[in-house]
Structures are given as C-alpha cells and as structure tokens.
Image 1 (cartoon, rainbow, N blue to C red):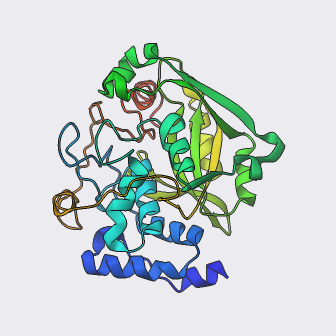
Image 2 (cartoon, rainbow, N blue to C red):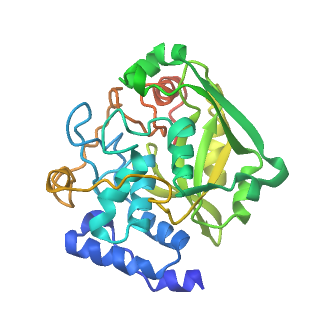
Length: 336
C-alpha cells in the first residue's frame, strides 16, 4: 500500500520550487506514512549538487545559510529530508531543522558536531530516531566504542573544528553496527526509509568514527543508498553492495559496519526541547531556490572549522584524514 500511495505523489526537485510550490509539496507528502514521507522528501534532492558543509548559522563563525535546497552534503541532505518530512508545514521547516541540528537556538557552539557523541544520541533522546540496528542485524551485530578525550581535541583534527573547551564533548560512546560483510544481506531485508550510518575503524586521534550517512531505498534489484556523494558530485542512488565494495577497497581506513536508525514522529515538548521561534531575521538567512548558485569546484575544499560530510560531522578530523589517504590511492578507488 505504501508504494501505491507513493506512486501517486510526484516529487519535484526541491531546488526547482519557489516558496509556494514547496509548501504545496510538503503538504502533499503528508498523505504518506512517516518512513515513506522521509524517502519521498529525500527523492526531491536527487541530482542536487554535492557541496561540502553547505549549511551554517547565517552569521558569525560559520555564515553559511541555515537551510538551502540547491546544494547538500551527506548529512545536510538527511537533515533537510527529515525536517521536510516531520515539520507540521513548510513554514515550520527551518524551525524543525534547527531542532535536529542544534541544542537550543542556532549557534556554532550549540551545533551537534559529533555523530556518535551528539547527533545520534541527542536526536534519539528527543524521540526523532530509534536505533534499530539489533532489530534487523540480530546476532551478527557488534558493539563499537569511541573514546573522546581532551587530548583528542588537542589533535589537529579536533582543533580544526574551532570549538571552545566548553563545546568539546568528551567521554566513551558506543554504537552498534552490522559488520560490512553482512550488511548487504541485512539491508536487503530491512524496510526502506532507515538512516544508514557508516562507521569506520577507530583512529584515536580523530573525534569520530562516522564518515557517511544515507537513506536506505529498496528497489526491485536490491537495497540502495540514497546519498550525497563526493564521488558522484551529487545526490544519487547507489547499490549497497557496490558502495561497500568500493569503500572496503580503501584498506587504509576500512568500513567496519553500518548502524541503522528509524525515523519517528518527535514529541518535542515531551522531550523538553525548547521551541525556537523563527523570526524574520532567521528567515532571511535561508537560501531559497534560485537565490544562489552552488559553489562546486574541481579542487578539494579547504579544511576549516565547520561540520563536514566526508561524510562526517567532524570537519578537519575524520574527513581530513580521509581526503589525505584518498590522495594516496588510485583515482578509481573513490570514497563516499
């Protein structure tokens, strides 16, 4: 039934819509159940150019806009698809996106920079996500850990984020994964609309092990990852097996497995999350369709203190090493 209903909802590219048409499309998606709505929202980003870390706070340390539809990286594609799927209507999309990306009002220090330490557990506690890795991976699942200390933040990658000591989360964090060699079979039986989080081998000097995030899509030929890809330079659907094969070839920093998360209808107020009102000033920080051109260059982007999709939330750490190692490999063995 879900697939029949989805077939009746034609999804236009988000970047092609003006405000009124975008509001109408958000409303049209409401006929779908949440998981299907999330998949449909992500479909609107297919073909959208990949741009490294395209979102910011619209001012201050990271002046990139709060939201934009003409460019995404792997995480911002997932975040914006989530916001479009769960927001009450189009007028609440920016507010919803801010709740997904921040603790409190938008600020660089308050952004959820580290996936396994912040973005995933905080959005689970808010009722937006449910960890279903063990539900579908069953007895093949293994638990990984990431220890983040003040010494980790003192390394080059941690410093590149530019966070004050108060904003540097520390501790030991755990994440369940389906091992890479079992992932294609497990994902073939999982429902589409899950968020797939790619976890690599631990590098103690880096603040994260998470390097990519995608949406699971099921097709007659098997499971696909819908993701914003540096290799493809856009959002594309790629067979799970092919994605894992080309990344497992990258032996210098192998993929250990994938974690799976189900999207839920959030109970924001019950979770104690303060409502962030979106005033006219914040609205002005959003980039609407046609306002800017995506800045795609042929040169690797500089590593600066912003979140990165390489795909990780920790720019200058996981992705910086990934880019460095990638430069030592054959151009045929491309990542993300």
